Image (cartoon, helix red, strand yellow):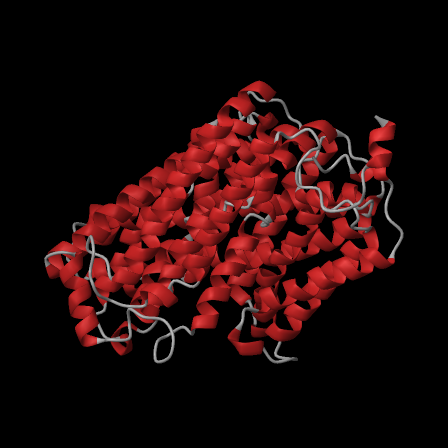
Length: 484
Length: 91
């Protein structure tokens, strides 16, 4: 009967998050700029958790310990990219924000499409973003479903767990907009960080007498586990290129990029970037959980590495209420990412695809309605992919991950290279995205284990430069609006 | 204004024409430092691909990455305080 106590804790948690998210947007005007960009007036604490919640995902909370358990030192890359990911934002976050205020942008594609005077670019960016988003939301839903399965002792099947997460998130995103997402992330972010530290330190001390002794034992039993390179689980090239593609691509993720439009001021944006590396430090105890499992359970008994977190606490005979709190924290990690992305996917679909293809400007009311419909639709598609997703679809979506970094040359060209032209931008991004997909779908081989996204990026930059130089420059008055 | 625009070329534009040289130097120095931090973490295995010594309860590789996260944080703080006056002026 202990599972009932665990489930009660999780249900109470869900009710609170739903309440918080739904009331956050109450009493605010019903406009696109409020729904997508919180009327451009979010303060530092809310911005910090809004951005942090996006990275502290199911992958970090459940997958992070799994990586530490199965791949060892390769998991250090998660800390690296989390700390460095927002750095490039220092260069263009404030500029994007200023242009957003001046020209009323609320999405990333609106900025790039305006700079390059191309609606086709808006559609390409929307499609690339949406494909990547579906994979990301699906991953979070699977994480949530997994939590419900464990909490109920297998009584809540996978499809039902994913459905609960879908309904809760869609409800507060639907009613609360980005403000709902932001305030739930403040609560969820602080909750999961506290739980991560308590658990990571507890496991290391209770099982080994401390993290130092834990790592000493791991190094003795598995000498290559705490290394990368030959004989280890990740090659040198794979580690370096995975970290570089993540750092370069991280701030290009549309759901993060467009948050530049929500900040109250440049100061708030820069404060968020300054404090962001602290999230990487919060990840250290999360990795400890996985490392602590190495000497406790063999991979054959465990099944999948992602099971290490639940395996650890179910074998520690914790009180059911504590188990409920731990699982609620895992759920917080998944939902705080799922909500941000669901909100962004709906906004991008409505603003950058529907409005462009309909060739007429929506009124504020129509636009908000379209975004809300898209939020529900996207959640549903992601849910269906989570439940029925086939291998081809999964491969297609994986390719989208490496495609996001292909937006980087567009950002650099927008802010720093007035000579870049529409033809250069379109040819560059198409080359990068297609090349990346050809590698992911195994049509062409991957060079030296280097991330497909990085290979596509190099080609993308070359094509952007050559095609731009070969075509007529764009109007000076127009392009210098976007540079300093 | 129109004339100024005519004179400007299409080359890479990182700074506005009226940026003081000291600000330019500062921004370039920090840009190089942050690029180095990114590269050091991506290629950490060149310097710290070892489990020992264990420092602050972490294997050497993990400690090395955590150390550079701390250095990055301190540099960002310094840069923020150097730029805060300019931001105040703009607001």
